[in-house]
Picture 1 (cartoon, rainbow, N blue to C red):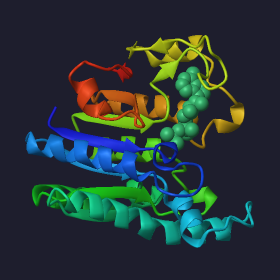
Picture 2: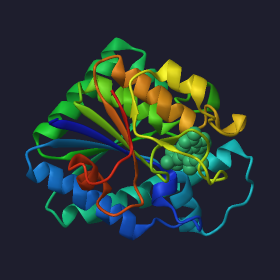
Picture 3: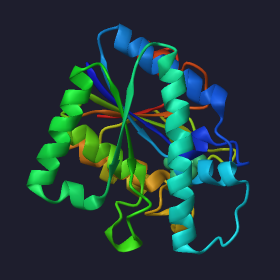
Picture 4: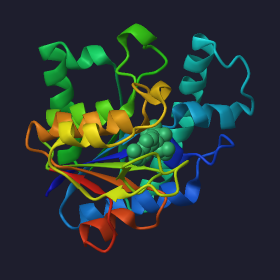
Length: 253
Ligand code: ADP
């Protein structure tokens, strides 16, 4: 596969104290640059603006307040991009920021413009770093999670592969965080069948990330013949190892 979308989850990037997990991010950027050296093209979809905002201003008050969250994302998006810019610069690669909302995928002329902008950036050897524009999207118009955003991006760009990096090794038959006997499912060819047999954890996590949106992202790209791999982004060199078949995750075909 030549065109690869890599989605980085917020749990991968944050260390729970509101700071970017720099070592992990640097390693992911290094792997992306390695892929580019091998003549592959890469688009990143990155979460983590909110958590970076918390780290930047060092407080996390007014938890439920939507406008406060929007403000945190505005602050944190800059921090996040600074980190991407700094790390990609180590490999002489430029980054370009693209912030999207659900409307961008609903109107054909907007979608076409984004598509052209993405192709242009990639043709210039630049890595687009995409995120939802959280500071301007209220709940009603939100895509809501970057798993779905990364799937739309992969489809829009005609990607050959979508890689979703999370903090678990893949899809399990039950939530591996609270069930020690959970078993990893390495390959999924039938998503409806999968959903009948696994436990996707708390209902509340449905629709706001969690494993459910990752499985639905797989469905979205698989419809267009694009495979998806779910991997543990906290493991060093996981993309390289998975593509060399030295490490496993869950592959959706
Ligand atoms: P990210 O920030 O990377 O998008 P999320 O926290 O939104 O990650 O989703 C991943 C989480 O989903 C895992 O950490 C895990 O606790 C939970 N989960 C629930 N059920 C499952 C399952 N059957 N297999 C894998 N993960 C599951």
